[in-house]
Length: 115
Image 1 (tube, rainbow, N blue to C red):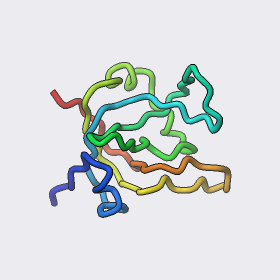
Image 2: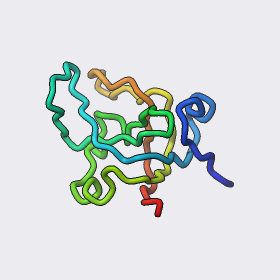
Image 3: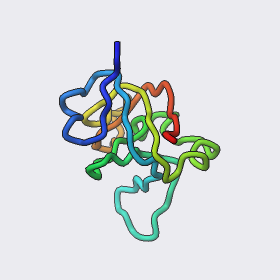
Image 4: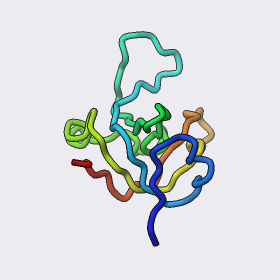
């Protein structure tokens, strides 16, 4: 079965809950609640879609949400496609702590550079 390709935020609600391919720019993000410049990166990453919408890679509370240094160095600022389960809003933390409210890709199978 072919995966839906998500390149725009308008397609997120239609494909929420499905295994999809998300294509966009790999970018480190600052997830602090009270943002104060300069940005502080703790390993969290999102894919920036063509329309500017961002899709978080794993819910912020998940151990895999902090991407490896090697992955970030190889992919930062580059066009990628990631395969996983799409959520229109990141799943809540199992322990009830506050979670980031933004689209999210979980159970990520792969992240590949697009030449």
